[in-house]
Length: 349
Length: 167
Image 1 (cartoon, rainbow over the protein chains, first blue to last red):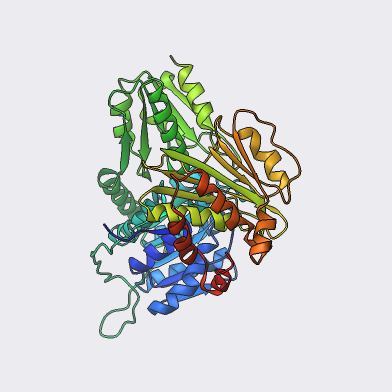
Image 2 (image 1 turned 90 degrees about the vertical axis):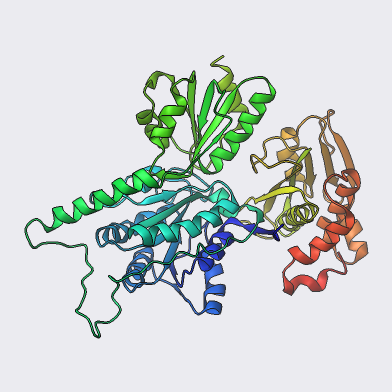
């Protein structure tokens, strides 16, 4: 068996990024993800990379855009209020088809909110977040090992589709320590003939999100983006089912909320109540079809979230019979309670 | 078997380190473990706690609502967490700093002067270690003394290892 180390989520994500070949990191500190820039500051110089603490979130995401245009594997990380500030750059990168990885280790909002973990940025992450008709891939790890593994995947997906990829964790995930087997590099390589690397011996290349001419250029760009999104929807959905087959009630949850829901399922089963858990690991693309199939013959579907019901809207969209879909959530950094989930599920009996 | 442990005290008493050492020691003995600190604007003098789950099975949730083990190094922690404990749980109370008695009758309570004990060993800052020693004596499921001592080397940063002999 491979050596396990006890590692904090934030540290594990940063180390995994370096394993994935991330050579540049630009960020601005904010709790609860400060271990990420601290880790990169220590480790990136050791591997010949560049760490830079920017003067603001806007500057950081713009530096990410520059490094990405130059062909580098680049990452930034932040927490909720900082994520709002980065939306301009993310929208520009989506329009310019630039790959990058952005981690949002969410805390409670709105505004500066608090520093406790939350899942209230689901809409922002899965609906684009900035202006324009765009999507970003959104990965939702549920434990420290998965956070590291999905970070490796995030870089590959970003390069494969030339798209910003968001790792959407919550403060609890960033702060928790769990045993970790360091992930291996995927071994995949991606040519970047579009990168701005100096026009010696070739024609100059052009990377921009602004398309004024010819007349239909912007619609053409949008159609290309939508085609990419269609391919991603078809091929990149990841989800995990736990004891769904014979379940009467299926819980739907991601991240730390899914850990708590998982515990509730185990306890419910001990009491003879058949519950199951469906856990999306990609929030965009959302596993709508899988959810629809699994829940079709179930009595009840309960979304559990650390928000007022954001993923719940996707669950409602996916389920044919909206009447059997219920919601339980805690707000502003509070954690869902196993006891309260159990009580709710028992009320369906 | 699963133990859900909360270690709580003043910031600076080393409750996070104590929790991390338990997690490392149990992990080295093949257990599933998780560790969540209470994080935020805590510093020496404030209050801090951490949640450690140690189990033979994969850990569903690292969050703890009803701890099976509670270690309290200061009085506010006793007041805050005693009422949340699972029936039949184990409560370790640092009597050097806590004059109050536990109120629950459905739990096992061990009173020990961890801070005095540590002061006699060399530093009152090692009360956390004294509490861990007491814990694994009561609950040998968690880890062996040897694993705990080894964990000290693994969990403590290089700079601070000079204190390990005291611990």
